[in-house]
Image (cartoon, rainbow, N blue to C red; front, side):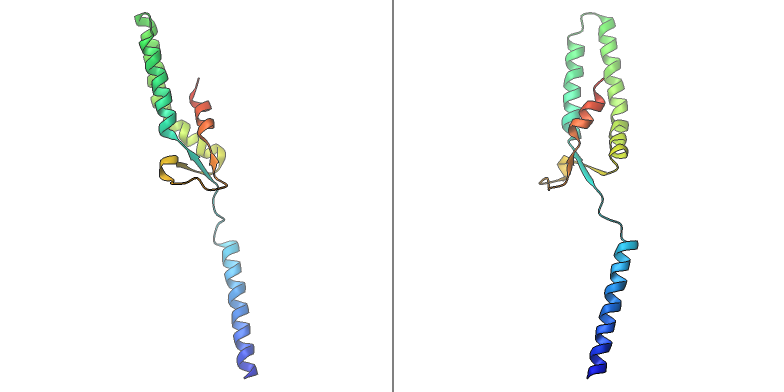
Length: 117
């Protein structure tokens, strides 16, 4: 009976050590997650650009406002990609998360800061 228990204990110990080594060297740690409300930022900037185009007094100012709006639309995806690269985290849109868990960074203010000239 004793050799059987010793064999089971040795097998459990070897399995626990192998599982620990696997998790240490093979499985990567859980990534840091950042949440951004991309739709909200886009809508705010869209409203700001529409207001600038609407308040333009002459054709030159209107063309300048339209060029700024086109530049914003063209650079917005790049700004989102920069956000992910700079924070070194997985960036998820807020609409994909039902409730914001603890430890998740809100990157919306940082995105607002980056898209404003």
